[in-house]
Length: 139
Image (cartoon, rainbow, N blue to C red; front, side, top):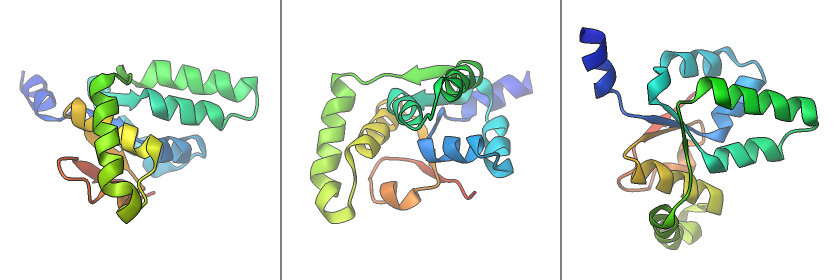
């Protein structure tokens, strides 16, 4: 019973694309990091999936990515109007001053809209966003 209560206290964690790239390159820290998050608390943004697909070199890699997502994430977070509006606000505040890019704004907005943490090795992309809980992954 204690495990269930403890698991509920852990926020959902969205894994950023950079960690997944480290994972696919065989980085042990990335593998362990993902494995240490309870399956029900692991989420991925549709934008991260798109970035992974875009990086595939052939159909074999595409199949591997799709299978990995299916087996390792309990939730895929898709964009909606709320996420899009939040991403626009984030870009207005952070694109010029901090170099925030469109996809990163959408991923951050997804995390904020779902009250999730965002795990990323690209901490500098997200660190100045108020209200976003960023977990700094170190490969």
